[in-house]
Length: 332
Image (tube, rainbow, N blue to C red; front, side, top):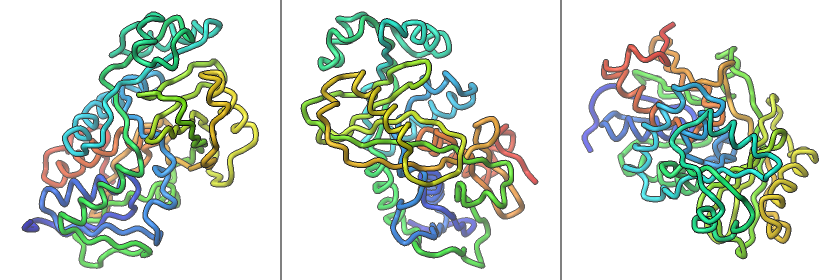
């Protein structure tokens, strides 16, 4: 592919940086993707993601712009990556937490109410466990490692330069797209760290087809199915930039809620317990900050996979003069 226009360095190869590099390379720019880690994705916050493409469900706590960008991203994911699993999202609650389900339904759209027989048809392994549920049929999910690997391979096939284990950028780059997440916290002082903890378990005896969110007033849970009976369990949102191991309390909460979703999870093998720190601004809405030739894309919070494609499109359009009026873009 012939490279046209400015030379662009993208710093940071998490999901935000991968989508920036892919989108710009696809549009014909000369792109250099740089990451300080020698092993791809080894310390990116997105490596610990559930990778749910759930714009309607996220509206429970997020402002409308997150849903709007998420819907656009969902379209981009589906047109780009064949590995998108479009089975929707199932939201359930035990009878004692029925009020949580009612609250969730009032805060979100894009769902239909299911009865027990509907739940059994969608997820046979959850038959007779829940009297009612919400089904968000238009939502989807991806395997985060598979999706990131696909983007990296495609970036290389588009003749972009990729360098791992390097801190700098090309001195002759016309633009630098800074996607370092918490690595940019000294330069972007409004950023804060939000710790997310997860447990990866494996039990081929359970066969869920889609992400399931179990509502609870104090310890909500989501379970995301991956291949070969592997599931990612998460939901912790802790105001901390500490990268250390998962706390005992969080592990107990996650495992107990997984068991409450289905007792067969009690026989699952624990594959991994780890945590990542997600960058966020005070309102949990991402920003595109233009500082001359340096463009900062940051603050994706827990919406990295959901919002990265739309933000990449926004930056590419801005460089071409078509997105200056976006409320997410500020020029300093």
